[in-house]
Image 1: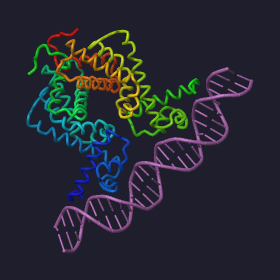
Image 2 (image 1 turned 180 degrees about the vertical axis):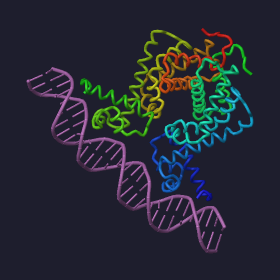
Image 3 (image 1 turned 45 degrees about the vertical axis):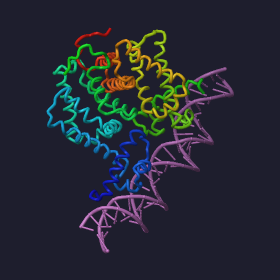
Image 4 (image 1 turned 135 degrees about the vertical axis):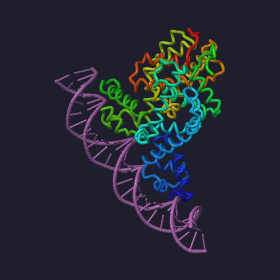
Length: 193
Length: 193
DNA sequence: GATTTGTGAGACGATTGTGTATCATAATGA
DNA sequence: TCATTATGATACACAATCGTCTCACAAATC
């Protein structure tokens, strides 16, 4: 079924529809999802056994896309602040995937915790934040968990600017990074970079 | 009906249950909400004509609570950064209300935009941010919309720390404000306050 | 071009949630 | 104490969704 052009197109359309609609309207019926995808409801059930199965697939695909987007970093060997900035730059265009993961986190954790790359990624993030602390780019007295939460929160804030204000991705990335590391306050001395 | 102790207790329990459950599980049925509230389903319908009506009431009550929490500020006459810090301090204990408003924003805007205090509050927030810019506490080149988004994002980040990490409200308030104004980076010279 | 295969449309029963109505009970207010 | 009134439990009709199935058709594969 996956070798047929029609099948991959249908599948993609359904996942795309779920990705866009479900976080915005979690009560959306599968009839609605199918309509948004421009696909018959019966076909939806041919691809996904249930609502739960659809959500699981969207979760997996979203995670996969993010992993893929981050692969360039493997070769770049960045650390600390530089790695965090690069990660934002690479992930921000996929903020809709991040939003889905956060919206369906209850299911997401169950589904993704089996994937070894999930645990790896979380560990890497912690290491990166702690590198930034060692490098003097993040104050040591701030709890790592708080820093990570803030990092995530700003990514969603940035995503909001992009979709609602039609802001430019690169501008927002810059805005995000300066806000994250320097805050909104004045910078009396530019000590970084 | 409102003069009876039982009625106010039921109403309060139902609103509390909706406030806690609906943002977490938007698919929750009214049967579930009633069970969580420890109230019969029939009684729920005596208080709220429909699911929509329940959500509207929770929205109104949430907004009301936030307005109430902020009333002390009327007499304090703070401006700019000081006003923003005070507002966070007063609102953070009501972060569950803020979360509900944000979760059901589509309904919320429809319901609350009729309330003149809503438009007033939004206007006040913009004025306060711009005061902070004039005072040199927020860099003028940052878009006001971005600053407000960041402010909201950090409040949710803080809320997360409080519920998931059982963090202390006052500690988190301090963390939030320093992160907001100074970022996570080092502070080479403390020019503020 | 012939065959295979995915699709759309529709029918179907089962399940679930919604909103209303009734009635006995228990708490409240006067 | 006594009348009022909110409640819980239950039954009910109604609508919507779910998940399955069938069939004719169109598109892809070979």
